[in-house]
Picture 1 (cartoon, rainbow, N blue to C red):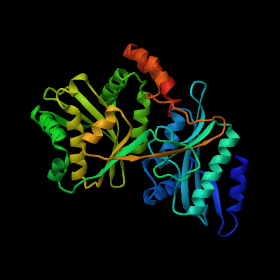
Picture 2 (cartoon, one colour; picture 1 turned 180 degrees about the vertical axis):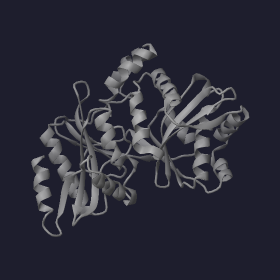
Picture 3 (cartoon, rainbow, N blue to C red; picture 1 turned 90 degrees about the vertical axis):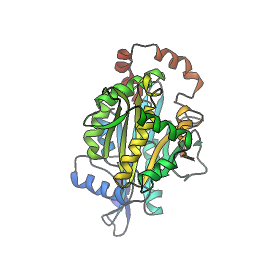
Length: 361
């Protein structure tokens, strides 16, 4: 056990004291307590769920540190962390790799402070170059902040027709074009069709794909809270697909892919409309369009749907570096690599990609 954790944990034995402990992934009762807290904590997100510990360990081999602050047997805050260590991209401690949201979710200022202090102690003991907390709202004005990313969220109206009318005219016309083209959506029992479209899509953009086993694990671990919707034409041809997460009264379309024919047939706009329509009929309240980098095509697409960007406060505590890392496709130094990746045969790219993407986080 980390000495700092052991010290804080012992203090929890005193009546009324707040202690920080690690989540034991082999203890079903502990996992249930963690997830019960996440389900009710206003600051928590889908990415604070305990299942991410299993996925990060088993699929990517990352060392995890899922911390919770507890007082008198009651959890007051959680902080999921994972170490991402790579010769190419560096050594970091992140809350949370592959997530758009992270950082502390807590119901008391004391829990926030205790968890962040313990995260910093772990970061120093691991010798990482930086600690990254993917906060929604800023917590540390003194820490460097990544301003590249924004999120897009919008309330879902209770009536289906109202949601259609809320889509700006140009994008609404694209949705109607998809309907006119005879497109329809299906819910898939497995990510097979999704992965084929997703892998082809990211290959065209010059970036490595997540491994197929990652998407299998997402569905296995999160069950009904992880769902694949695929758009097909009248012949049954798969055109566009999205893997979404469900959390409380929200839907989060998270990973997506499409065929080259999707744009001409308006399959992508139709896809998101179908997800919104189905979510409305399920009684969900919020459509979380996820994260985009400013100045990208996905940013413009979501803006055209009438969603307004909201800045994300990714904050960094730096140890072994002087500036925030820029391990993303917007970094000009990766341009030649992106162009070269596009030229790789897709079968080889899908084999090689997981060895690279696991270190990006």
